[in-house]
Amino acid sequence: PTVGALVEAAAAEDVAALVVGTRGLPVGGRPLGSTALELITSLLKPVVVVPPDAPHRATLQRVLVPLEGTISTSLAPKGIIQLARDANLEVIVLHVHDAASLPAFTDQPQHEARAWGEEFVARYCPWGIGKISLEQRVGRCDAEILAAAEETGAHLIALGWSQELAAGRAPVVREVLERGRIPVLLVPVHLVRAANARREESWNSLPSLPI
Image 1 (cartoon, rainbow, N blue to C red):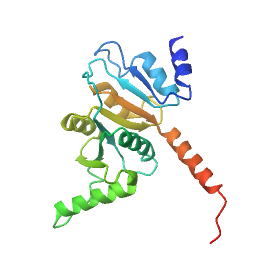
Image 2 (spheres, helix red, strand yellow):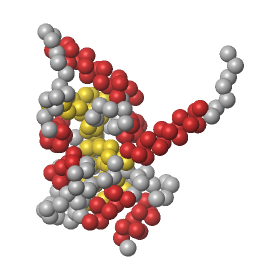
Image 3 (cartoon, helix red, strand yellow):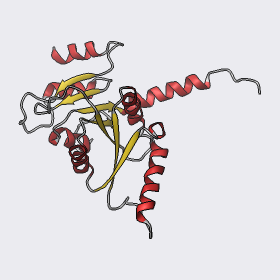
Image 4 (cartoon, rainbow, N blue to C red):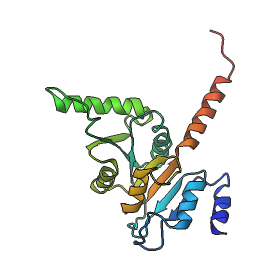
């Protein structure tokens, strides 16, 4: 069976990620074909999904990483940003404000907006300081992600997600997959959480040094 064989092959320790086409044709009424859908929801590794009408590129140079602004959701972009840094890729972190979360600025909005952005990066992606640029938008998250990807010329959109596409779940991932025209890297958030927990456990198990 196709899905079982692909999952087994991708489970090998030396496989970092799987790349799969979303569907055979640009039209179809669903964001993913059945094979791609089963793979992204069952494979416990990052998966890159490529739409059939994605532009052909010799290399990837620019990655857009949407970031909500919570500690839990910032874990997945951490691995993405570190990987991109090693590969010498340009990383653009995107944060989308809705009307309720838009910070209030006073008489110097240009300076306060910049300061807010610097604080955002320092708090939610400190590993990327000096290595990334931050885009801030106001609007609906899925629409602004797609608009930012087009306007910045991103070659890849990287999203952390919970591997659930049931009705009412992962609406942003669903919309980006359905309406986007560039590849999307989906990183299971629970994998990154587990890796960070193992790292912390290993660190705590080290013998303490005398002062």
